[in-house]
Image 1 (cartoon, one colour):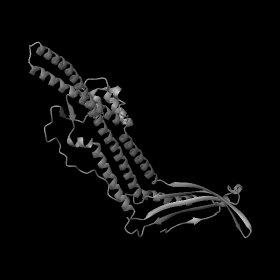
Image 2 (image 1 turned 180 degrees about the horizontal axis):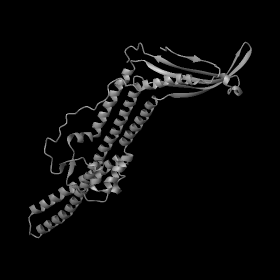
Image 3 (image 1 turned 45 degrees about the vertical axis):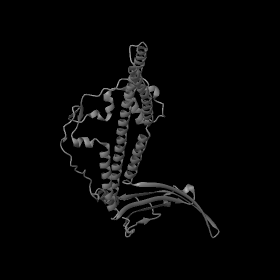
Image 4 (image 1 turned 90 degrees about the vertical axis):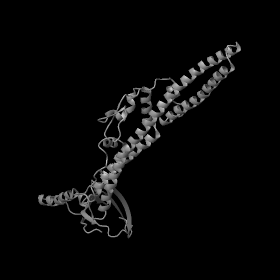
Length: 368
């Protein structure tokens, strides 16, 4: 309900005195002070998690406790394998899940900008031309002007909205980091699996060649009476077992190549030429530094995402509480009206409207 609305139309031009200027600026200054008041609703405080100060189980030989490695976010570079690094980069640029996560970050960033815009005044320009006839007389009316409005954030609803939008943005960024961590881990695991299968396939093919020679030798010895049939059968069984392993290894290797292609946004078979060369297995570092449990949790993107979502929801409590209180809005408009376009610049045809309005939701059937 509006309780104050001051309007004035087609007033004569008067030069304001200093006292009038002060009287006009004083309410604006007071309104600005009101908008800086404390916001309603709870202020967010990070929850205290019961995390031990040290690991409760002894670390393995390859793990050592200490400060977190700053390069942990790019852990694959430790292996100094250019193919692995290239695959991770391809996945970051072209993976579908990563693209969706980046789109969610862009959406959250845009929403934060929209929410922050509510904290400032807004203005709209307008222009109109009309023609009417009354009592056989025709008249025209032209007008140009603008409208401006500013909601004074007395109870902090807008500020809480900005806090919620910032929490959503941070959660989306953590979600993107979580996708990238999972994606890099999956690529690293599949890449190691592919390189291992390549070496196993090499060994199986070498074994097949040796076992073919062993089988031929056993047959020759048996035909010459220097060996028995049991040795021939054993050599043949070993050869057939190795021959049966090779197609399985080839299928597993092709599946690993295809999985890497899909993870990097390519079609199956697109990375066969890149991965065809058998390279040495990446060398695992002798020791990995592990931070204390609390720091390890803070480095997890999914934990950061959940914490930022909690912050956003806490801010939304303040938004809901602010809806229970009155809203103060300062609105104004200015326009020039004339019967023809040549007279639009005539100051005598001006009209303006300036004043505050107060609204308070009285009944909403429990919506708030």
